[in-house]
Length: 423
Image (cartoon, rainbow, N blue to C red):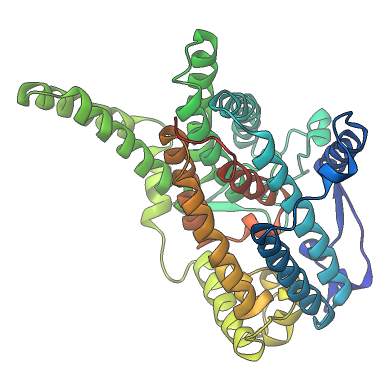
């Protein structure tokens, strides 16, 4: 839920572009309050003296200052030289905001219990989102009313630009819940399910296990209803991986393995007879290179490489991909194709050039090294979360361009740098 503003830089070819609109979300207000609270607590702390607020200028601290200074200098040049500096400056402010959130989480999280508390919040919210998604699917439209204040859009299956799935020649509305697109909902549900499975189902509290189980069931149903092919494939792989590991642990003898295998086969047959299985199978079976989603992504990738060739060093500027894209597009509906390229790595390369792309890869490598130092259980979960982000990010852009995706990505980065060391 947010308030949109429409300055001149948010228009391209006379069209208002949502991706370019500065928006103050309710979650932005919460982060600002969190930052204010943090600053006030630091200033008012009885144990905080001026000398304790200024770290010793040792080599390690000097190195950090140099790195931060270089990044800020690069981003400043990127903003100044961009096609629309005010738009880039807004992107820079958002980057600072989510960097603070990630940093704050890295300092605030200290124990596995806190991961469990985060998983509980994901479980409760995913139950709400899943129920809303199911009801939207059954209604083939938004529910409206009070759900508007939770961020639900007003839409039906005939709303221009709405996401429908072509199943056997019939258009079926893909539910949004309170997200801007069904793919974003699918990505969120995947992240939530990993948290819930890893930290709630293994809780000693019975009620947490029940909440976790309900969340997993409803999230799985809602995920299938989104018809998001990449997310569903990842969900299937995760389920097979989990049950495969369980089979290896439990089935100690050949007889036990045969029995376990039979149960799996029977389970797959039962799943194949469930409602929606046919529709989902058709969704995958009908996928072809002529699909709008495929041709759209191909066109955006082709245009991206042209942008990268013309602005290879520092890119076109933060959030300036769409303005740079417009002159390169073929004659086609601008409202359909004026959107970010559906690959987060190509998007970063386009907007920040080789330097920004190199900084991103460097950050990911450092983060993976950091994750490897964490508690074994936490380490496994975070690697899975990054695997989800990277795979889905190869086919979509919401991790970098939409508020919910940015919040999730900042959370994952923050938790990855938390000091939950191996015991």
